[in-house]
Image (cartoon, rainbow, N blue to C red; front, side, top):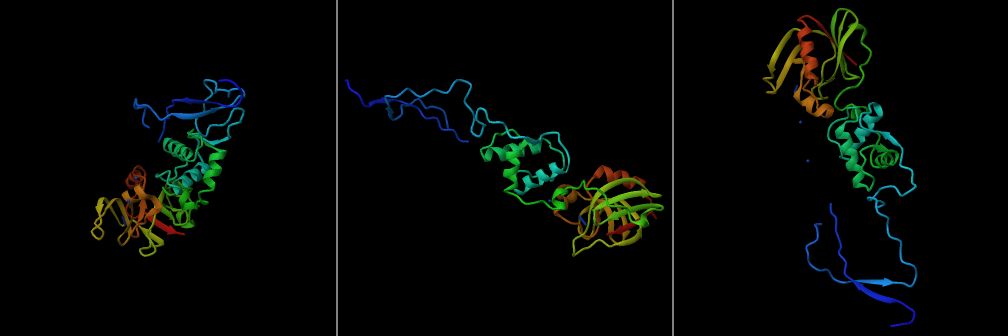
Length: 276
């Protein structure tokens, strides 16, 4: 044949498809495929992609500067807490914010990136952060500190003398104080509005290491009773769900090692101050 115009060539091709007081392409099959119609113009042939220059979806183009990394594994602080709280809102992170960019956070960020066609680095860069901001809301204080770790409020003046369990409702913390000195602090949880934790000045009148509530049929380890059936004690539910739950009026502690040490130091007659 001669002359100008188009030459129609029929070629065989293969198409590869890739998928992919007490808490969710399989490979080639060897069969032939239908012919593929290819139009070839008289112009110069298209340039092939050089080996080693094939990029995965979402990867930056050649010459494009990668987005600035804001946080990565090993970083800590309030900003990391906010990142984790926002990842929880869009259901990429289950555990409560810890303030530490750990392996769980890295995997959550990588999953979030991959779902949105971004490079799956596991590091939070400026592009990833802006995408997350657009899908979530500003977290409140107790979203940031869902599992505790918040700073303690200043002690009530009534806590500055003697041996005192100084319990702040505003910061949800307990200070163990002796003569004005803070020996230890821990996050605590209180009763709901239907079963509120009483406020005021009390004394520890009974200690029960392996206590079980007869009213609610629930374990209350390291219980230190200060007002009727209300006590400072370890809570398995608080350890598991954080501030997503509430007690039946008791002062719950989620750090078992911390309350075990506290229980060993507190004596009957020591003062308990519960304040706003």
